[in-house]
Amino acid sequence: MKRSRRATRLFFSNMPEAGQIALNADEAHYLATVLRLRVGDAVTAFNGQGQEWACRVLGLTRRAGLLEVESAL
Image (cartoon, rainbow, N blue to C red):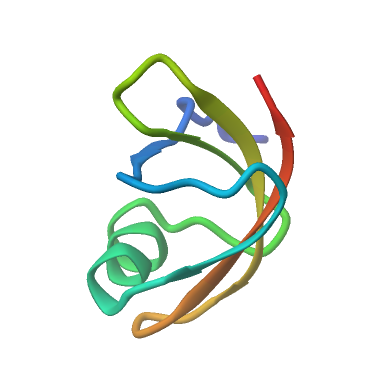
């Protein structure tokens, strides 16, 4: 049985228009341990000023992670 996932959203105060986002230890721990996300899972990043970006998990451990920014929403 496939499990359903809720949309994962992360706040970032400064977001690039394109490229990659390196996660700090707290952010990586939250995604990997609490939410149990895996490589390839979708994440929506937002800045609290009405801008959002569709991202994909490229790499993730409990101490570090990397998101790829796919597009601005």
